[in-house]
Length: 338
Ligand code: AHG
Ligand code: MN
Ligand code: MN
Image (tube, rainbow, N blue to C red; front, side, top):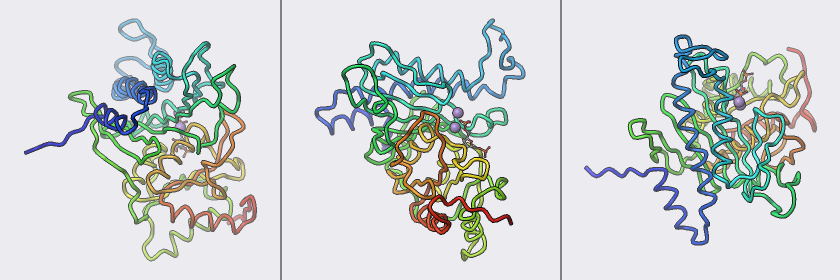
Protein backbone atom coordinates (compact mmCIF):
# COMPACT_ATOMS: atom_id res chain seq x y z
CA UNK A 1 0.00 0.00 0.00
CA UNK A 2 1.35 3.43 -0.94
CA UNK A 3 1.47 5.83 2.01
CA UNK A 4 1.41 9.53 1.23
CA UNK A 5 3.09 10.93 4.31
CA UNK A 6 4.29 14.52 4.18
CA UNK A 7 6.43 15.93 6.95
CA UNK A 8 6.18 19.56 8.06
CA UNK A 9 9.63 20.12 6.59
CA UNK A 10 8.59 18.75 3.18
CA UNK A 11 5.43 20.86 3.34
CA UNK A 12 7.42 24.03 4.07
CA UNK A 13 9.87 23.36 1.23
CA UNK A 14 7.03 22.67 -1.19
CA UNK A 15 5.29 25.93 -0.22
CA UNK A 16 8.52 27.90 -0.64
CA UNK A 17 8.86 26.58 -4.19
CA UNK A 18 5.54 28.28 -4.98
CA UNK A 19 7.20 31.62 -4.16
CA UNK A 20 10.41 31.83 -6.21
CA UNK A 21 11.52 35.04 -4.46
CA UNK A 22 11.08 33.67 -0.96
CA UNK A 23 14.23 34.17 1.09
CA UNK A 24 13.45 31.33 3.48
CA UNK A 25 13.53 33.71 6.47
CA UNK A 26 9.86 33.39 7.10
CA UNK A 27 9.87 29.58 6.96
CA UNK A 28 12.73 29.65 9.41
CA UNK A 29 10.48 31.27 12.02
CA UNK A 30 8.04 28.38 11.77
CA UNK A 31 10.96 26.02 12.35
CA UNK A 32 12.18 28.16 15.27
CA UNK A 33 8.75 27.84 16.87
CA UNK A 34 8.35 24.14 16.22
CA UNK A 35 11.69 23.21 17.73
CA UNK A 36 10.93 24.42 21.29
CA UNK A 37 7.35 23.16 20.97
CA UNK A 38 8.75 19.63 20.88
CA UNK A 39 10.70 20.34 24.04
CA UNK A 40 7.66 21.92 25.70
CA UNK A 41 5.68 18.86 24.65
CA UNK A 42 8.18 16.63 26.43
CA UNK A 43 7.91 18.69 29.62
CA UNK A 44 4.11 18.84 29.41
CA UNK A 45 4.02 15.07 29.18
CA UNK A 46 6.10 14.85 32.34
CA UNK A 47 3.77 17.21 34.25
CA UNK A 48 2.00 14.34 35.99
CA UNK A 49 5.30 13.18 37.42
CA UNK A 50 5.93 16.34 39.46
CA UNK A 51 4.88 14.61 42.66
CA UNK A 52 7.65 12.09 42.32
CA UNK A 53 10.20 14.17 40.44
CA UNK A 54 9.77 17.40 42.42
CA UNK A 55 7.28 20.25 42.64
CA UNK A 56 7.67 23.63 41.02
CA UNK A 57 10.23 25.61 42.94
CA UNK A 58 11.93 22.43 44.21
CA UNK A 59 15.37 21.30 43.28
CA UNK A 60 15.15 18.09 41.27
CA UNK A 61 17.34 15.01 41.34
CA UNK A 62 19.85 16.60 38.95
CA UNK A 63 20.12 19.61 41.28
CA UNK A 64 18.14 21.82 38.86
CA UNK A 65 15.32 24.15 39.90
CA UNK A 66 11.98 22.77 38.71
CA UNK A 67 10.37 25.62 36.78
CA UNK A 68 6.74 26.46 36.32
CA UNK A 69 5.79 25.05 32.92
CA UNK A 70 4.52 28.35 31.55
CA UNK A 71 7.81 30.05 32.38
CA UNK A 72 9.74 27.11 30.98
CA UNK A 73 7.75 27.34 27.74
CA UNK A 74 8.29 31.10 27.59
CA UNK A 75 12.05 30.82 27.94
CA UNK A 76 12.28 27.94 25.47
CA UNK A 77 10.39 29.92 22.81
CA UNK A 78 12.30 33.18 23.35
CA UNK A 79 15.64 31.39 23.27
CA UNK A 80 14.87 29.58 20.03
CA UNK A 81 13.37 32.62 18.27
CA UNK A 82 16.27 34.93 19.12
CA UNK A 83 18.88 32.30 18.29
CA UNK A 84 17.17 31.89 14.92
CA UNK A 85 17.87 35.62 14.25
CA UNK A 86 14.78 36.29 12.12
CA UNK A 87 12.94 37.99 14.97
CA UNK A 88 13.79 41.44 16.37
CA UNK A 89 11.17 41.61 19.14
CA UNK A 90 8.93 39.27 21.09
CA UNK A 91 5.80 40.08 23.04
CA UNK A 92 4.74 37.37 25.46
CA UNK A 93 1.86 36.93 27.84
CA UNK A 94 4.49 36.11 30.45
CA UNK A 95 6.38 39.42 30.10
CA UNK A 96 5.08 42.89 30.92
CA UNK A 97 6.83 44.55 27.98
CA UNK A 98 8.24 43.66 24.58
CA UNK A 99 11.61 41.97 24.64
CA UNK A 100 13.73 43.76 22.07
CA UNK A 101 16.80 42.11 20.58
CA UNK A 102 19.26 44.97 20.34
CA UNK A 103 21.10 45.17 17.03
CA UNK A 104 18.91 42.53 15.43
CA UNK A 105 18.41 42.68 11.68
CA UNK A 106 15.40 40.38 11.97
CA UNK A 107 12.39 41.56 10.01
CA UNK A 108 9.78 39.88 12.13
CA UNK A 109 7.99 40.33 15.45
CA UNK A 110 6.42 37.41 17.31
CA UNK A 111 3.61 37.69 19.85
CA UNK A 112 2.79 34.59 21.85
CA UNK A 113 1.01 32.88 24.67
CA UNK A 114 3.67 30.28 25.47
CA UNK A 115 1.32 28.10 27.52
CA UNK A 116 -2.39 28.60 27.19
CA UNK A 117 -4.83 26.91 29.53
CA UNK A 118 -2.23 26.68 32.25
CA UNK A 119 -4.82 25.97 34.95
CA UNK A 120 -5.28 22.62 33.21
CA UNK A 121 -1.65 21.53 33.53
CA UNK A 122 -2.08 19.93 36.93
CA UNK A 123 -5.21 18.04 35.95
CA UNK A 124 -3.91 16.38 32.80
CA UNK A 125 -6.17 18.28 30.41
CA UNK A 126 -5.16 19.67 27.00
CA UNK A 127 -3.16 22.90 26.86
CA UNK A 128 -1.43 24.78 24.05
CA UNK A 129 1.00 27.35 22.72
CA UNK A 130 -0.30 30.23 20.57
CA UNK A 131 1.83 32.36 18.24
CA UNK A 132 1.41 35.23 15.87
CA UNK A 133 3.96 36.71 13.44
CA UNK A 134 4.13 40.28 12.08
CA UNK A 135 6.55 41.89 9.65
CA UNK A 136 8.43 44.97 10.87
CA UNK A 137 7.09 48.05 9.05
CA UNK A 138 10.24 50.22 9.15
CA UNK A 139 13.67 48.68 8.93
CA UNK A 140 15.49 51.93 9.79
CA UNK A 141 16.00 53.25 13.28
CA UNK A 142 14.56 51.90 16.51
CA UNK A 143 11.39 49.86 16.59
CA UNK A 144 8.28 52.03 16.74
CA UNK A 145 4.83 51.41 18.14
CA UNK A 146 3.52 50.84 14.60
CA UNK A 147 6.00 47.96 14.21
CA UNK A 148 5.23 46.38 17.56
CA UNK A 149 1.49 46.83 17.89
CA UNK A 150 -0.14 46.11 14.57
CA UNK A 151 -3.70 45.19 13.75
CA UNK A 152 -4.55 41.51 13.49
CA UNK A 153 -5.13 41.92 9.73
CA UNK A 154 -1.39 42.56 9.43
CA UNK A 155 -0.40 39.14 10.74
CA UNK A 156 1.74 37.19 8.28
CA UNK A 157 1.37 33.91 10.16
CA UNK A 158 -0.40 32.54 13.19
CA UNK A 159 -0.83 29.15 14.73
CA UNK A 160 -1.03 26.99 17.77
CA UNK A 161 0.40 23.80 19.15
CA UNK A 162 -2.09 21.67 21.01
CA UNK A 163 -0.74 19.29 23.63
CA UNK A 164 -3.69 16.92 23.67
CA UNK A 165 -4.26 13.21 23.20
CA UNK A 166 -1.92 13.84 20.28
CA UNK A 167 0.28 16.87 19.83
CA UNK A 168 -0.73 18.99 16.87
CA UNK A 169 0.54 22.07 15.09
CA UNK A 170 -2.11 24.10 13.25
CA UNK A 171 -1.02 27.20 11.37
CA UNK A 172 -1.73 29.61 8.58
CA UNK A 173 0.37 31.99 6.53
CA UNK A 174 -2.71 33.51 4.94
CA UNK A 175 -3.18 30.74 2.39
CA UNK A 176 -5.50 28.40 4.25
CA UNK A 177 -4.95 26.43 7.43
CA UNK A 178 -3.02 23.18 7.74
CA UNK A 179 -2.72 20.80 10.65
CA UNK A 180 0.19 18.50 11.50
CA UNK A 181 0.29 15.74 14.08
CA UNK A 182 3.47 14.88 15.94
CA UNK A 183 4.56 11.30 15.44
CA UNK A 184 6.38 10.81 18.75
CA UNK A 185 8.21 7.71 17.49
CA UNK A 186 10.12 9.78 14.91
CA UNK A 187 9.76 13.26 16.47
CA UNK A 188 8.31 14.71 13.26
CA UNK A 189 5.12 16.65 12.61
CA UNK A 190 3.22 14.98 9.75
CA UNK A 191 0.57 16.66 7.63
CA UNK A 192 -2.64 15.14 8.95
CA UNK A 193 -5.27 17.87 8.36
CA UNK A 194 -4.67 19.62 5.02
CA UNK A 195 -6.73 22.72 4.20
CA UNK A 196 -8.81 22.81 7.39
CA UNK A 197 -12.27 24.40 7.21
CA UNK A 198 -15.05 24.77 9.76
CA UNK A 199 -17.76 22.25 8.89
CA UNK A 200 -21.05 23.72 7.61
CA UNK A 201 -22.97 22.73 10.71
CA UNK A 202 -22.55 24.47 14.05
CA UNK A 203 -24.19 22.69 16.95
CA UNK A 204 -21.78 23.32 19.82
CA UNK A 205 -21.15 26.31 22.07
CA UNK A 206 -18.21 26.77 24.42
CA UNK A 207 -18.45 29.30 27.20
CA UNK A 208 -17.81 29.51 30.92
CA UNK A 209 -21.50 29.72 31.70
CA UNK A 210 -20.82 30.06 35.41
CA UNK A 211 -20.52 33.79 34.67
CA UNK A 212 -24.00 33.91 33.12
CA UNK A 213 -25.55 36.34 35.58
CA UNK A 214 -22.82 38.89 34.81
CA UNK A 215 -23.06 38.63 31.02
CA UNK A 216 -24.59 41.53 29.12
CA UNK A 217 -28.12 41.13 27.88
CA UNK A 218 -27.26 40.37 24.24
CA UNK A 219 -25.02 37.46 25.26
CA UNK A 220 -27.68 36.11 27.59
CA UNK A 221 -30.36 36.37 24.95
CA UNK A 222 -28.19 34.54 22.41
CA UNK A 223 -27.54 31.75 24.93
CA UNK A 224 -31.25 31.44 25.69
CA UNK A 225 -31.93 31.38 21.95
CA UNK A 226 -29.55 28.52 21.12
CA UNK A 227 -30.79 26.51 24.06
CA UNK A 228 -34.52 27.11 23.79
CA UNK A 229 -35.35 28.17 20.22
CA UNK A 230 -33.11 26.05 18.01
CA UNK A 231 -34.83 22.90 16.68
CA UNK A 232 -32.24 20.78 18.49
CA UNK A 233 -30.45 22.12 21.59
CA UNK A 234 -26.77 22.91 21.05
CA UNK A 235 -24.13 20.80 22.75
CA UNK A 236 -22.15 22.51 25.47
CA UNK A 237 -18.40 21.80 25.52
CA UNK A 238 -15.98 23.87 27.60
CA UNK A 239 -12.47 22.72 28.40
CA UNK A 240 -11.07 26.02 29.73
CA UNK A 241 -8.12 25.99 27.34
CA UNK A 242 -8.78 28.31 24.41
CA UNK A 243 -6.56 26.26 22.10
CA UNK A 244 -8.40 23.03 22.89
CA UNK A 245 -11.88 24.58 22.75
CA UNK A 246 -11.10 26.35 19.48
CA UNK A 247 -9.57 23.24 17.94
CA UNK A 248 -12.56 21.06 18.75
CA UNK A 249 -14.91 23.65 17.28
CA UNK A 250 -12.76 23.94 14.16
CA UNK A 251 -13.03 20.20 13.59
CA UNK A 252 -16.63 19.66 14.68
CA UNK A 253 -18.29 23.06 14.19
CA UNK A 254 -19.02 25.40 17.05
CA UNK A 255 -18.75 28.83 18.62
CA UNK A 256 -16.29 29.73 21.37
CA UNK A 257 -17.26 32.66 23.57
CA UNK A 258 -15.40 34.63 26.20
CA UNK A 259 -17.80 37.54 26.66
CA UNK A 260 -17.38 40.77 28.59
CA UNK A 261 -19.06 40.90 31.97
CA UNK A 262 -20.26 43.64 34.27
CA UNK A 263 -16.99 43.57 36.22
CA UNK A 264 -14.80 42.97 33.18
CA UNK A 265 -16.39 44.56 30.09
CA UNK A 266 -13.41 43.47 27.97
CA UNK A 267 -13.51 39.90 29.19
CA UNK A 268 -10.37 37.99 30.04
CA UNK A 269 -8.57 37.05 26.86
CA UNK A 270 -5.75 39.10 25.36
CA UNK A 271 -6.19 40.66 21.94
CA UNK A 272 -2.57 40.27 20.90
CA UNK A 273 -1.66 36.81 22.20
CA UNK A 274 -4.98 34.97 22.01
CA UNK A 275 -7.76 36.68 20.06
CA UNK A 276 -5.82 37.87 16.99
CA UNK A 277 -4.04 34.61 16.16
CA UNK A 278 -7.25 32.60 16.64
CA UNK A 279 -9.17 35.14 14.55
CA UNK A 280 -6.66 34.87 11.69
CA UNK A 281 -6.79 31.07 11.76
CA UNK A 282 -10.60 31.13 12.00
CA UNK A 283 -11.02 33.43 9.00
CA UNK A 284 -8.56 31.38 6.97
CA UNK A 285 -10.68 28.32 7.80
CA UNK A 286 -13.89 30.01 6.63
CA UNK A 287 -14.92 31.15 10.13
CA UNK A 288 -15.11 34.53 11.80
CA UNK A 289 -14.07 36.25 15.05
CA UNK A 290 -15.76 39.21 16.67
CA UNK A 291 -15.85 41.25 19.85
CA UNK A 292 -19.61 40.92 19.52
CA UNK A 293 -19.70 44.28 17.75
CA UNK A 294 -16.68 44.38 15.47
CA UNK A 295 -14.20 42.20 13.63
CA UNK A 296 -11.32 41.23 15.94
CA UNK A 297 -8.71 41.59 13.19
CA UNK A 298 -9.60 45.28 12.65
CA UNK A 299 -8.88 46.41 16.21
CA UNK A 300 -6.00 48.86 16.48
CA UNK A 301 -4.17 47.76 19.63
CA UNK A 302 -3.12 50.30 22.23
CA UNK A 303 -1.24 48.11 24.65
CA UNK A 304 0.48 44.75 24.55
CA UNK A 305 -1.75 43.16 27.17
CA UNK A 306 -5.12 44.64 26.27
CA UNK A 307 -8.12 42.40 26.63
CA UNK A 308 -11.10 41.87 24.39
CA UNK A 309 -14.35 39.95 24.45
CA UNK A 310 -14.01 37.08 21.96
CA UNK A 311 -16.60 35.19 19.94
CA UNK A 312 -15.03 32.89 17.36
CA UNK A 313 -16.12 29.93 15.27
CA UNK A 314 -18.47 29.22 12.38
CA UNK A 315 -19.04 32.47 10.51
CA UNK A 316 -22.84 32.31 10.35
CA UNK A 317 -23.05 31.61 14.04
CA UNK A 318 -20.77 34.47 15.07
CA UNK A 319 -22.73 36.83 12.82
CA UNK A 320 -25.94 35.61 14.43
CA UNK A 321 -24.47 36.32 17.87
CA UNK A 322 -23.48 39.84 16.75
CA UNK A 323 -27.14 40.43 15.86
CA UNK A 324 -28.17 39.70 19.44
CA UNK A 325 -25.46 41.95 20.92
CA UNK A 326 -26.22 44.87 18.55
CA UNK A 327 -29.82 44.92 19.69
CA UNK A 328 -28.57 46.40 22.95
CA UNK A 329 -26.92 49.53 21.65
CA UNK A 330 -23.51 50.70 20.57
CA UNK A 331 -21.59 49.11 23.41
CA UNK A 332 -23.86 46.11 23.92
CA UNK A 333 -23.31 46.72 27.64
CA UNK A 334 -26.86 46.34 28.86
CA UNK A 335 -27.68 44.15 31.78
CA UNK A 336 -31.05 43.06 33.05
CA UNK A 337 -30.80 40.96 36.18
CA UNK A 338 -32.50 37.59 35.66
P1 AHG B 1 -3.73 31.26 30.14
O1 AHG B 1 -3.57 29.90 30.75
O2 AHG B 1 -2.78 31.52 29.03
O3 AHG B 1 -3.76 32.35 31.18
O4 AHG B 1 -5.15 31.31 29.40
C1 AHG B 1 -6.31 30.81 30.00
C2 AHG B 1 -7.47 31.32 29.23
C3 AHG B 1 -7.91 30.49 28.05
O5 AHG B 1 -7.12 29.45 27.68
C4 AHG B 1 -9.26 29.96 28.44
O6 AHG B 1 -10.10 30.02 27.34
C5 AHG B 1 -9.69 30.84 29.56
O7 AHG B 1 -8.56 31.38 30.13
C6 AHG B 1 -10.47 30.12 30.59
O8 AHG B 1 -10.89 31.02 31.54
P2 AHG B 1 -11.99 30.67 32.65
O9 AHG B 1 -11.32 29.75 33.60
O10 AHG B 1 -12.34 32.00 33.25
O11 AHG B 1 -13.17 30.03 31.95
MN1 MN C 1 -3.96 31.91 27.31
MN1 MN D 1 -0.66 31.56 29.05
